[in-house]
Amino acid sequence: MKPLLRLGSGIFRAPLVGAPLHRAWFSLRRLVLAAATPANIARYLRTHSPAKLQLGSGPGGGGLPGWLNTDLLPERWPKARLDATKRFPFSDGVFSCVFSEHMIEHIPLAAGRHLLAESFRVLAPGGLIRIATPDLANVLKLYAATGDTERRYLAWSAQHNRLAPGLPADVIVINSLFHDHGHQFLYDEAALTALFAEAGFTHIRRHAPGESDVPDLRALEQHHLVIGHEANNFETLVLQAKKP
Image (tube, rainbow, N blue to C red; front, side, top):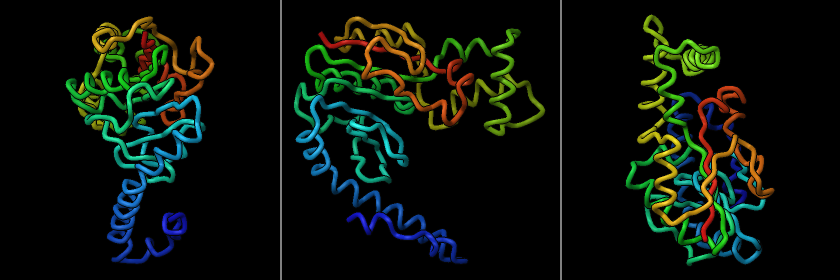
């Protein structure tokens, strides 16, 4: 299986046939990884204690070392396929930690509720959850912003995301955060805290990206590698909680 997944990419540069072959190759690779998911999960749970689950680790990249890294459309070995809007393919109480970064905003509110309920189910008593997502409160601060932090973020976002020129940056950036990138629902701290509590979690606390009072949950966030520390610190809400 590994040689298949490591096929050279030179053929993808061939005129006319390169792009269709590239799409077909990635579709095949995803199918292979999806088929291998049950074996990957069983192998991980057999060889890792404590077990830790990442939801939405992204299609590429290597994932977090020591974690079961999952994604809806994985493209890298040995990530496992997991649809977080469906029942998770795990028994109750098998994980010590669940982590998700900039993923829950990509599914509808009802699916976000389901994700948190399933995370609660698969966590062992005393297990921890950590969710990072765009902060609606800070997004709304961008409208008619006068603060230096907000104005720098607006200038950065308009350039980084190549947003349409000629209109006020606050209007364009706010609309982009709601409607681009596959976003479906944005949370503020109060709303996400309410959903955590609804799922049964306690000891709900906000942390800065990368920071935690639990060593296993420090330095997990990687979104700053894409957008930089200043933008990430401004736009990201991180909540951490415990299963009693």
